[in-house]
Length: 219
Image (cartoon, rainbow, N blue to C red; front, side, top):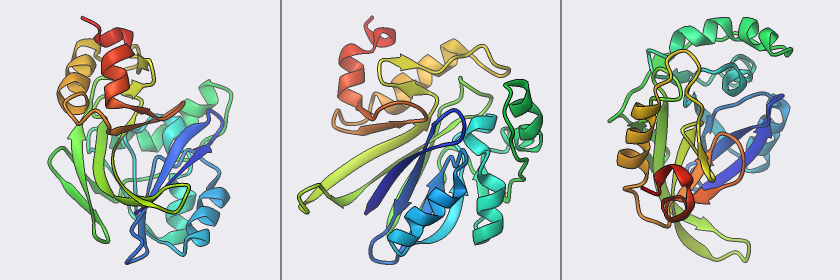
């Protein structure tokens, strides 16, 4: 299994590339921009892009969707209730003083769907609360560490639902604090403690660390 994180777009969104070493198939999650860097990372590993998946449709997470789609032919997947946000990415980016590119969904996914990247199975979970219909993606596999040794890795790509030491804001349209907290508790914090939490911004953390230290879950 190949897992790469790149900071992309004007708000430094964490974009994740997940690839299968055997088949050289890959997926890109939340391409916020910097498409040349994403394409370069795919090329460095000899990976072919199977699909683009968005955790949610806030403009900073989807700014690279259209260019990446046009240059690879890979479909854009997200929850149906998030899809309208793709069509006004440029307008919403301008409100913040940035430029953005609109895109269009190629297909829809929801909790319970299993996405396949070669031999890797990715389980889709419901993480709404930060946005109307945010999704998370849970997967596991063998990955080489810095010393070239294989180790088993389990991870969840969670967009802006959960951060190291914090949670996503809920004052945007479609936000719901109680729902977000419940989804994090039920869908993320029930995963094994060693599970990597791959957030939309900031550093990588683990389920165990957030259970022990995140102030929103110390009750």
